[in-house]
Length: 127
Image: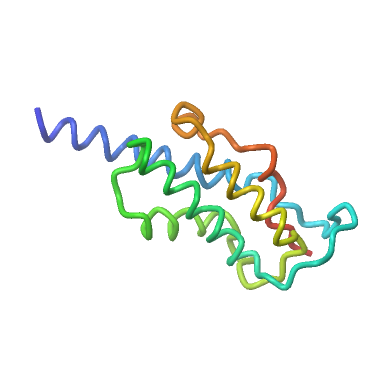
């Protein structure tokens, strides 16, 4: 019975991780348009790491992920910025900070259902 529960938990974690990656960066903007905000000197990978760290920490806090924080972030970053992780993102530091703060306030139901906060849509912005 314990093995069945562990297997089910790992299966859920795998599905949730895939959804997390799709949700957190599903709308990665590749146009470079940012509504007139100052360009950032951060990479897409750096911004993804900040965002995914916040989201993964909420998943762990909400018992929606059984792995380590670093494993969650590493796996999520593979999808978040894919082959553009080294590219410069034009999303501002302020936009990333607002996204991270919004994630920290997500309730556990939103985390479990992989809700993307509006403040995070389109971050990172890669040219």
